[in-house]
Length: 588
Image (cartoon, rainbow, N blue to C red; front, side):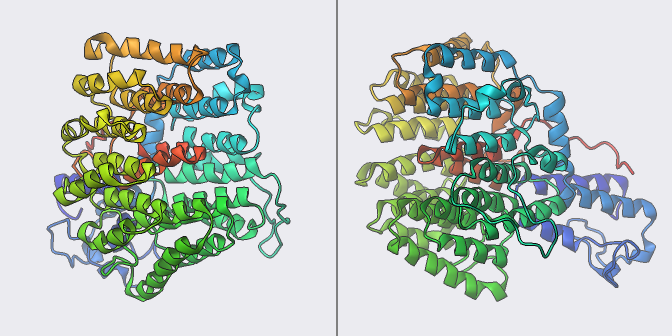
């Protein structure tokens, strides 16, 4: 940034690429190392802080020799890294170029009501989630505002989920987040010292959902502003501490904290979430386990080597050991799953460093911990194409006694191999003919995730026979997988088969003979195929070949909707706006 104009542009381009990788903690560390102008900063002697080594200029350029123009460049770099600039660009791109078709939702609503499925809360909940996919990040929620009575049919957890879907639609819209969610948020104490109103154990579905939505608004885009994120995180933490009595609000608050403090590795937050986990409430505990994973994502805490500060390493080692013990002691499957997924997230990108933990989980008697081990493998070796990981996953996929574990193993193949996606359909070809429906479902999802947005005709023809499978959820997987492959493809794609696929989706939704699970797949696919106003795709890697941490984690958490429907909204993290940011001149 100290160099010529071209060098400065290159520096800013590097800033955009860093943000694109989705590792917020690393980006903040780089931003801290940038020199700051003494006048605008209360820190003395910062001028001599070396600039980040990406500029090949003498690193001890003193602050006095920098012109105002150069300082403007540094301000711009900070704005890109921590000021939420990329998030603003994504928001305005998705808002201005949204091609979401309102008719899709109108027809979906009509066919659900015609067949009397209006009473079916699962499908209603799905339709609301599908609407949020269609308009993800576009801030366009006019359909819900016009059909409030339809939206209000949601009760209990469906209400939680419907409120959270607002977070997907307004993802990245951080400036207006509080105003939007004001009607739903739980009441908080007015003054600093004032006590928050007591939380009752009943109800709280809209309140919990709104805290989750707040997390999604701030956490869905990797480049959202660090300051506003911190503010939201503190606001949600306040509710997290006060809401232990109500598991619904605790659940929403824990997920919200996980998303806003994503990758921060903050020990205080970790301890607050651990407290919630130890209340032994199944629903809140599951969210707390996953949120712990999100806060410590990619840190490798509890392994022999980890990227946590040396001062915290001991305590985190202890916490991770406690979590593993707690997972073996608790009676609640949900909590075990939360912890297993949390451990999987902590080991993101750790490769060999995570082997000991993964081996320990794989050898466990409890199938849920083995299930977590498959996703830990997927994230630890995400995009590496590691033969060892593939061998272990394939072995598990055919030999484990638990269906869920086999399912997780097959889906994990897509994560490990996403950089060479054409290998996934070849590997999974035989598994698609498996007699075990869970393996067939997982194979469909694996092909979909690996080939998302490519419109690859071979993969589509692989999944085609699965659309008429005997088992309802295999049909669901085939629909979802095909929708992912067809994302952002024109109607001419694959010799116009995409058109007949869209027609098939609407006929399944209106067909009274189809089972709920298949219809659910069709409703979600309707949202996925045109996600984000037709301007988003599911991409595990950034354009430069880095794995995007937010996308990988978002997809893994989205896959948990199999066990817990509100996780459907996590797809918001994996949806990437398909645009290119070009730099022409450093603007003041």
